[in-house]
Structure formats: C-alpha cells, structure tokens
Amino acid sequence: MKRLIQRGLMFGNLIPVVSPVLVERYNRALKRLTGKQTELTDFHVDISGYSPEIGDELGDDLYLNHAGVNRQFILLTTEQKTAPLLNAKFSTSRGILRQFIEVNEAQLFALTARDAVAGELVNSVYALDTPRRLFDVRHVDIEADTTDGAVASAKKLGSMIDRFMREDDAWCDDVLIGNMIGLAKDTGDITRNPLTLNTMTFDQDNFWTAHFGGVYVFRAVDVPAAIVMGDKDELGELPIETVVQAGERSAIAQFLKVNDLAEPIVEARGIEASAILRQKMDFMVADVAAGLGEDLSGATRRDLRNMGRRYHDKLPAAWQGLADLVRWAEASGPWPRIDSEHPAYFYTLRAKDHADADLVNMLLAELTPMDVRQLFICHKEAFYRAYMGWPDEKKAYVADFLSTEYQVDKAGTRNALFGHEAGMDEPARKDDLIDRVGPWGAVKGR
Image (cartoon, rainbow, N blue to C red; front, side, top):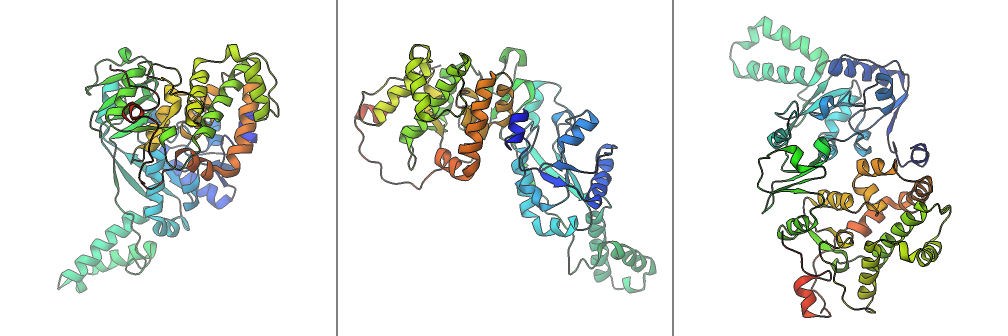
C-alpha cells in the first residue's frame, strides 16, 4: 500500500490538521462523541473527520463508525467536503455528508470559525446483527451541533424570543429576560446571524453496503432485487422478492435490462468506445503478463500490444470478446455474439443516465475486476482489497498508470468514461437485428 500512498492513490486529498487550536477542537468533539482523545499533534482527516493516523493510534479504524452503522462525523472546516470518505460501509454516506456541508455551508463556516461541529448520520438501525436488518434502513437523518451546543442554545434562545414577542407581559418577566441575556452571550445576535442547521432527511432506497460480504440493495426500481457478492445462502431469507448472487451472471444482466439501468459502451453517445474497450484489453494483457513475471515498468500501450501477441494463447476469453467487439465497432468485423454468460459481457456495459448511475457503475466495477481503472474510480474498497493480492509487477504497473494517466485529469477521465450527453436522434444502425438485441446478443433468461 506504500506505493499507492506515495502516489496519492490512497489517503489522497485528506485535510491536514496541524494547528494546536484545531487539534484541541477535534479532541473536544472526539471526547463528546466517543469518550476518547488523541495524543497526536498533527494528523489528516477525511470528509467525516476520520483520521487514519488516529485510527492507528487507537487501534480502531471504526472509532467514528461503531459497528459500521450510524456514522459519526467531526467538521473542523467546510473544506472537508472535497475529501474522500475512508472505510465506507455504505455507498451513500459520502454523498449525504457532502450535501449536508454544501446546503449548510454558510452556517458551518461561521460555526467552525469558533468550534468543531460534531454529529451523526442517524437511522433506526443501531446494529446489523442479521442480514434482514439491512432492509430496515430506510431513511438517514443528520444530527449536528458544536461541542458547546451553540445550535441547540440558539434554538432555545429563538423560542424565548418568540415568547417574549408574543406574550404581552413578557417584558416584565425578569427570569425570561435574564435567561435570554445569558444565552445571547454564547450565541450572539441570532436575529442577525442565525445559528441554525437545516434539518435533512435522506432516503436509503438503493445502496451498497460492505456488511455481509457486500450487498447491493435496489428497492426504488421497477423490479427490486438484492445482489449479493458473497454466498446468498448464508444470508438466509431476505425481505425482498429477488436475491441474486454475483456468479449468477444472466440473472444480474436481466435485472439491469428490465430496470433499464445499463447500456452498451458502443452505443453510448459522446465517448470513444473503441478507445475505452482497447484500454480494458490492455489491463487484461497486463494482468496476464504480470502473472507470468513480466516486468511492466514503464510499459507503453505498444509494449502491451506486443505482450498481447506474445501471450495471445494465454489471454482470457473476456479479452477475445472485447477484441471482437472492437472490430465490429470499427466497422471491420462481424457482429459478435457476446451474451450475458460470456466473460466479456459486463466489460461492455456502463450505467445509463439516472440517479443511481454511480451505484450501477460500482456494481459493474466489482463484476469486472480486471478493469483496474474503473475499479479504482468506482469502488475504492474493492480496489484496495484486490490490490493486496496482486503480484508486485501488476501493483507497480497499476500504480504508475493511475498516477500518470488518471490523476492528472480525474474529472476529464470520469466524464469520458461515464459522462452522458443530451439526447439526439439516433443514427441508422448496421442491422435491424442489432437494434433489437444489441451488439452482444440477447440477454439470457434466468
């Protein structure tokens, strides 16, 4: 992992905490949330305020996320909104935190100028002791305040002001006036500078969780399903009609099709489909070559093409399928039959333009682990887990590739791979049959 850290591919974009004032504020918030404190004088935090250095110090990577449920957070600055979320247990957590910061940015800027803001992503589930409990996760509310309770005090003061203005004899209520003055010393003039945070509730209909070996839950679709990365039999009966295991390729393909969640890369508008497919093929060549002990240091695409010829008989069927599809896309080959059971099938797809595109791309990344770029972009946890099992030659190649070809233009790369253009009239296709079933062939039934 050291190689990834050095290249900013792990623990990158964290927010440094070096000021004694900020460290002291962090400790107050940490004490309030967990009863613990750090002895460190400088460290880094993610969007939730989690610090890998403090996690190492405490021997607890979940010190702000007990049992992986109801994530707590510490905000020292609104700049945390750009940081990643480490050790994510739910795919929605970072998006919820970022939206909370952006919606309340002005208020949080004022609050964090004087104190840390501590809070929690709250749902009705406090422990996922059984897989069925996953389906009790429906909504997430955010509770937050400064360590000295400024927001609660401001709310209480606001109620007192309303009472003072509403009741005719309140002007002679010395106790009420004294309490108002006392609170105002802490909150300031809340009529001019309100200390309020918007109450926010987020639906949890479609999400991924790391619990129980990894589960994708899709409830807000026409045909709901849970897609399980581990052994679905070990989860027991779940309160959802369809439960699919990762190896059930045709069932997953059918789920994506009936819910209109994915599209073939070769049919997507505004992207260079052939270039994307060729890059996926290069990753497969690198995987084979590294497994055979080939030194990939400084390997160019030409080098990988040469290795592809050298190890052609050892390349996986997925590579062969993508090669056929590239030839078809470039109008120089016949239409390939790549059905849902073909190893190349999921490599030919990406999410359509809908609210859960990131979740679908995350699922596709886990189903296509040789596409290391998509795995890194869409599913960091799965990438780091896979990385630990690679030979050193592949680790070096992937780290070099991501640092030189992805890190230099993250937004551009993501847009090129997953961006969507506005609708246009479709050009005429080569064959009416292709219009009906797509370039991979018909999706097999379950």
